[in-house]
Image (cartoon, rainbow, N blue to C red):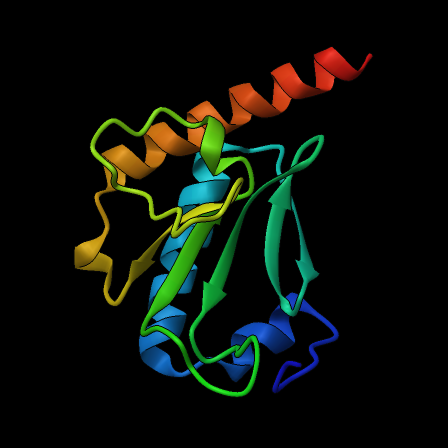
Length: 134
């Protein structure tokens, strides 16, 4: 179903074309700045970031899901996007029940303050969901 199989994040990063790599590195740093205790691991051949549960992911268009590219740039998604406060419709749900995302073709296209707010809220949701399970 996918066009590649990575053994590490470093291998994933080495695979990316320069334009996607620039956006991916920016988003990864943004996530680490907002969530210093986050852990990163590959799932579905892309990096997922978690504390208690998966919080968000970064999915470049060059890492296919299926046989063809379905979007351009780099997708940053939130696994509990349906729970985030998104009054402006910044995140795309595209009929999905849980995951919300936004695609970026350049660093300049990223609304850093808004994305930081989503990341911080996603951490709060991660904490709340973990507390409810206990």
